[in-house]
Image (cartoon, rainbow, N blue to C red; front, side, top):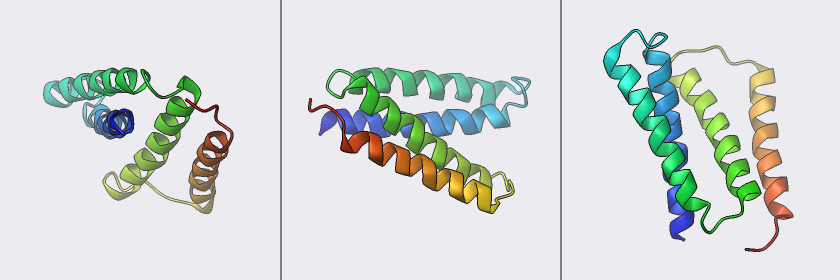
Length: 108
């Protein structure tokens, strides 16, 4: 169960890092820039820990798919980005793709 905790932590830190990246205004603001680098760096560290027990294809699919979907939701909720039916369909397809990939994943 610990590898999945590391993976969840990597996803959360990647979302925080991405949000700080948006706040950094192209790395022109110091504190958000430090937050972006630290968040994304920590996300990769915890992703690497999860890869010790989770196959790369499964971990990366979960990390990128869930991270993308949640980052889109953060963009909508915090940054007031527009949402369209295409956005909703795209997020659903990403989540569906992660599910399909994990259904046929090799046992570990």
